[in-house]
Image (tube, rainbow, N blue to C red; front, side, top):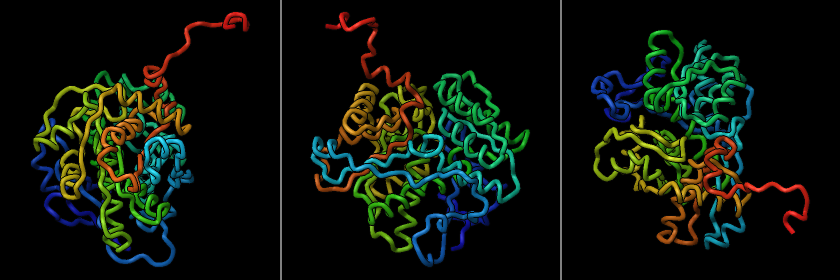
Amino acid sequence: MQFNYICSECGQRFDIDPGLAVCPDCSQHQQLNQPLVGVLEVELTGQLDGAFDIMAWLPVDKEYFPAIPVGGTPLWEPEILRREMGFDSLYIKDDGANPTSSFKDRASYLVSAFASSHGTRKIVVASTGNAGSSMAGVGAAAGQQVILFLPRTAPTAKLVQALQYGATVYRVDGNYDLAYDLSMAYSEQRGGMSRNTAYNPMTIEGKKTVSLELFAQLQKAPDYLFVGTGDACIVAGVYKGFRDLEKLGFIDRIPVIYSVQSDTSDALYRAFQSGVFKNIPTHTVADSICVDVPRNGFHALAQLKNHGGSVITVPDEMILSAQAKLARSTGLFTEPASAAAFAGFLKVKHKLPPDAAVVILATGNGLKDSAAATRGIDVPERVITSLDDIL
């Protein structure tokens, strides 16, 4: 296989270079408080020989990947939930089973390998929590220095996780968007490869591996896929994987992808309706998908429009209810951003054929934000000293 960069907007091709992140021509039109312009994708050409090896689909040689078992996550077949929902081919892709309990390990894994292949030992990232703790964990396995800019409101578990992995953490008195801007300025002034979502082409490319795994596990593409969405980089990565599968003749259609947002953090949804991204302050219980301006907004929006996808919203109350429902019917405790995907399925399932193959992408473990989970359950206040207290 051969690999190069291609601009998602103007179609220019470039050699893969660690000094190149976005299209040098299109990025000149970047506007303040708008998604990235000139996002680069990795373009692959050629044919695959031998067995279906996911590593062969990636633009970095195997020798550069750190010794940490990213990917290969289980595809659950939830019997009780299938019966209750009336969907015999309902699946849950559990990416909370990755080493740092997050889907973001897929991007961090490839970014780490890419940095190592070019002799870079310092990686800079902004995160609401998962991307940062993920990069810190994968970077620790690679012996890399990770600099993390984290909003002060990030869940404690994600902060502690990053610090345990040895990352240098700067807590930002502001939201993710400010953390992103500060991290970019840091990279420019003090060096280090930026792992920021969409800005580094390897983030989208690493995330495409979930689609390759789903194809290998199902022996086909699913009919529908539900993805909780903030920066919209996961949506783009999922599309990239299926597009590569289609390009090489493994599948003949792209699944219908539902991008699911909280109705109080719905920038992509609003832009899907109007074509315009407005910088409106957001909030949601699902911190991992709380974004004012989706950095990969333009690119993801084009993918959704071109391939018949959809963007829907659900209220926070429904996200918390879906989180509890998923846990009680399957045994999977997933964080609110993952539960948003399930809530989206619950909202539109009446529109889907019951014999369809449907996948819920669960992107993170519920222990990442246990405080949020307590809002959807009744925590006992009373304590007892003997059975007489309850009999």
